[in-house]
Length: 501
View 1: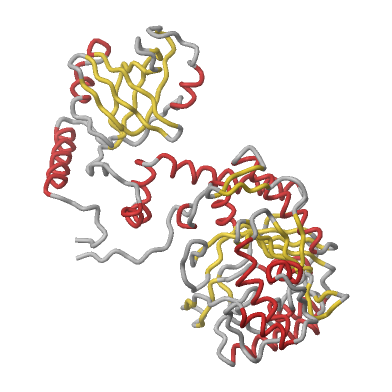
View 2: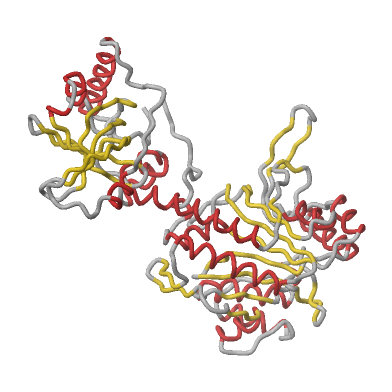
């Protein structure tokens, strides 16, 4: 028995036995509890909308064909009320013995909660005022052998809900709505990107050189080539190869894989959109980020003024841009920058109980203050700019100060939603930074990148000035559907496997 099973009891086991007996009886009588097809021509929400003007007790001659899962049954002898659920909502079925063939009425008596059925009938509003379908035929489409769980919500059942997402979606319609919104959100982003002249492309998931981000990879083995490959941690380096090849605007929405921990905003398998545009810089990427988020918010929320976990967030207007040094200075009440003496930056870190290392330069010390003190306090969309080069191995240096990079992170409600660079296109500079990453890996940094010789070769052919951005699709879905955890916007979040006998 699974240690995460749905609390099977003798009663539910008996219920499953009874349902199996009903299934077999239908088969023995020449019926089919699992027919191949059925063609509904109407859905619950549309019927409610189209017939909203019907008066109580008013019938129509309009015939519809609907299908869905039985969620409630109330049998009153010669009439029976059934609540049918499809992906748009619920509609009442008003069965009357005189409207059905005897075989169909007998079949109705064997229907259980959770069964999937199809009916054809006329639309009416009952005397009590409920829009209903009065069936003249009934078809069993899938006999449910397992009863639906009675309670599938609350913190105590979170693990079961994630593990048995199908049951979670049946019993909690708001979960299904979240996934529908996620789908609409991604479609809206695609429409926006296509409208901006970007080409959607696909790049390899299996890669033999680790690059594009600092992260621990998953490793797999290719039998035919007898060599190990990585599951990609980013799409960046392949997309920029396409910029070198002449595709001036490209993007990819796809899965990334990082062999790291799981928490409220991290899953080892996640979705990003990465986009690259020739002849622009981070200013162009700011415009892209604003445009994509606002297009998604329009589609999912219908407004730019949203609420996330009780906190009002304004996505409208022009978003703030601020340097990391500005934000740190505001937080500590003292002007700090990359020019602040090392000793003072160390003191400020220590005064606030933050750990630091002797090898850290001013940039890393400043970043530590931002990371620990500032990021979590930002609510409205803010482009945090001017990251130190030590923490930005692929970003172009700022012409005004080569210790900083032309990079921003988009932060909303204390979390990073996007990371963007004016891309490094100097092959000699890139060689040096790859060499630094190799040295860091040799020193024990498991998240450091490898030296990508082919990418350097591509840069040697010449890559135009380019802006690039990566946007976290899962986190955007959390924001726009008001979900507290990344698991709530992933249909199948990663979990430990069930232990079965």
